[in-house]
Image (cartoon, rainbow, N blue to C red; front, top):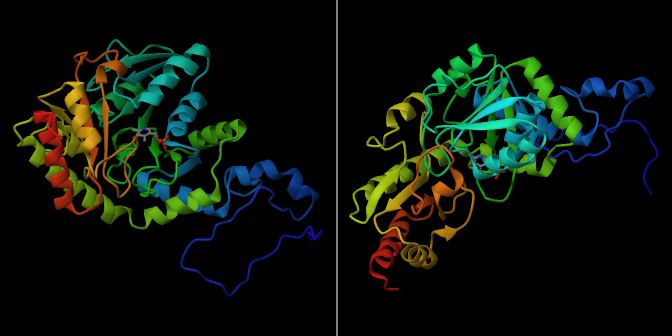
Length: 385
Ligand SMILES: *Cc1c(COP(=O)(O)O)cnc(C)c1O
């Protein structure tokens, strides 16, 4: 039988676990009528209903805000939701948004479908943009950046773009999924940092979550009100998984970054490789910007092989034993994926038939990974199994 007591139940006072508690709740109890009637005042800091926050999610929000260098974070159900909710919270029909050409594919899809349908125009600019001259308009509400670019790894001149956006009265949103915990985009002019916590933050490929972080309290209240009205929240169990991941984030990232660089150098020197795209490489076109905006790289790198035919690339990819085929990145596992950049770019010039193969270097034994890669490149070149 459920208890009919309406009094909040206090937890055992002498129990102190090292691990954070998972507070599961839809209903949150109130002491009296007035508390209940005033529950909306608790949206930003207190607790009123499970959807709007629990001690578990608030704890994660505090940690995420500190990691991004902001003051407040809002958890949402995915990295994609972080970007889409930030955009919708700022824009109304008739507004204009500038977005870099290299944004995450599903963000581009959102811009071309839902944003368009509600009358918000999204215009794309070069992935390596260093100026917004002639492109900001009186109704430009937001400038959406993403560095390094999705698969293609370009880095924008973030500080200059932010300055020009602010002069024009627009806010700067950065999809900082790559830069999470290795950058401080607020120091370079970002107003809103969105991050996919599904990546290194959680670190085990078993949770999907995103965060919107800001440094301004009024902006926090505007976006939190919007996400609450939309009904977006996260489960405390998922928040717990990310809290657990954050405890080992820095040493994991350091190891992924070292391996990413080692594999990038090895691939750069390989005769079958035309180009490695990893801005952490000193020889990369975007390395100078990378050094200014990021403290470290990670385990992601994209490769353009000389032999660019899909048949050969299929033989290589399908035959890998340790690089598994899959979307996303940031877990301990090595992954491989492939894209044709021209299919998802409308400004930058990518040859129609060019493929990029993206690797995520995981934490498996490096010698085994290297042998897997070497055998894959043999299959690509020779057509032999
Ligand atoms: C993974 C990723 C996303 C989407 O995150 P999900 O949590 O998978 O929705 C968005 N942007 C970038 C740059 C990403 O890498």
